[in-house]
Image (cartoon, rainbow, N blue to C red; front, side, top):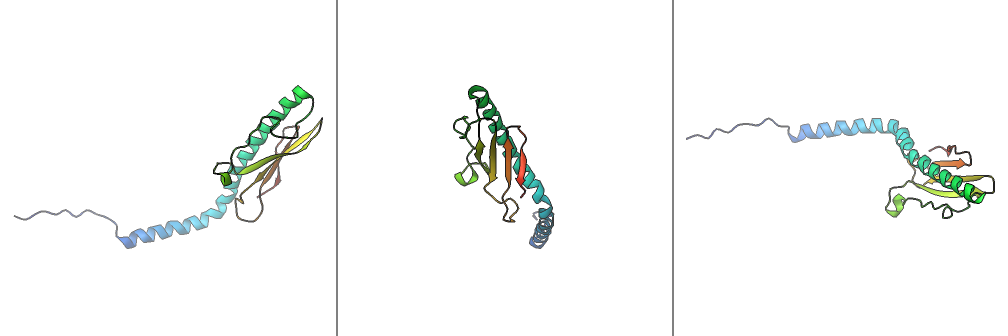
Length: 135
């Protein structure tokens, strides 16, 4: 009695390697075009946290009639950075605080596009985040 063996259509190793090589080449072509989008997406973190600092500073101002010079005074706890096994890409600090104005800064701890320039955002008492250094 003869056994009937069905042949299943499949790809061989060479075909698979060629497809992977083509995908790799396409990624190398597309990646430089995607870097600005990646930087923009990561900068949303800085803007969101700076808005939280702004809200905390405003609340402190309404209670004490002055802006706080320390993040601990406004009960703002910065998220853990990627260097501390967290998820944040920025460090936060208050660089200026007087009775009538304040300025907070978010500085990137990683170079998103590898050009040696780190992204920096600032917010002031008016609540408008602005990009000081573009990565």
